[in-house]
Amino acid sequence: MNNESEPLIEFLCTAGDKDVIAEPVPAREVMPEWFKRLPPVDKSRISTSDNALTVKRCMPFLDALMAGWILPLPATVRIDIKDEGRKVDCGWDFDRTLVSNHHSYQVAGHPAQPRPPCKFHNFWNIRTPKGYSCLFIPPMNRPNGVVEIVAGVVDTDEYTSLINFPFFAIAQDGLYTLEKGMPLVQVIPFKRSDVAMQGAVRAETEEEALARQKIARSTSAGEGWYRTQARGER
Image (tube, rainbow, N blue to C red):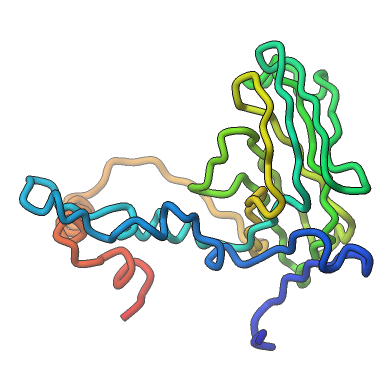
């Protein structure tokens, strides 16, 4: 149940698409299977010189994995990559267009070229409260090896229409099937600020160096500094 005091992000679709296309879910609810199976500690390495902790105990990794929402692929898509990535043909199990092409001149000089820019069609209208935008990125720590979404920011409090997602096919030549429900885009809402943050580049002070070293040692000792201190949790 939503807390009325918290900002609400809404994902709206047509009545005909409801319960047909894959639905958005909080990222924390769709953890990768390999991550679920990974133990927090590799017991086979406890006697070695390292600390035997796995990435399951790495809070920066975990927080990125669980941030925001996941927009899944609405229906199954087959991608045929040919001519060293220069040609991408797609088919899908849906009654509307799921994939189309951008023109290469629109991304002239992009490192992904000569791979052509394509786009996934999205059927969810994403809305946020006044002053909130959304960052759209490839799902963090969830590479699929076949396609990679191009990151973008949209002011979803004002642009209340469908947002499509440009991508590049990054796999080697071959025929690939992307199943319905596959994590496609990670959506991270954030509050825009009128306050500009200035930057500074300098050498650290002796006090700052000591603080950094203390944090590094506490983290290596498994004391969980990142979560208990940096995030203010107890």
